[in-house]
Image 1 (cartoon, rainbow, N blue to C red):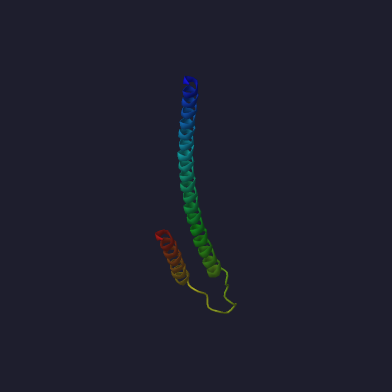
Image 2 (tube, rainbow, N blue to C red):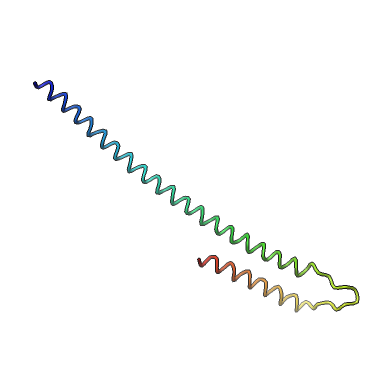
Length: 105
């Protein structure tokens, strides 16, 4: 009879060892999933920042092209550099406001 008890004891020990190993693997998987989720969230945040910067840059470039692209007709009045500077400052201010509002979200 002592042979059966010894065999059952080894099987019970092996079962407990497998259960413990399974729990350890499950805990490691949860930790790796959390790390992956954190990295994906960080990447998404960086992509959002880059997208915001690109959008602001495109707005700025569009504004600058629209300011400098028009040439007055011959015989017409030319715009003063003050007017151009004021328009440019307004454009930069609006781009900056758009950039700041996206970063605050």
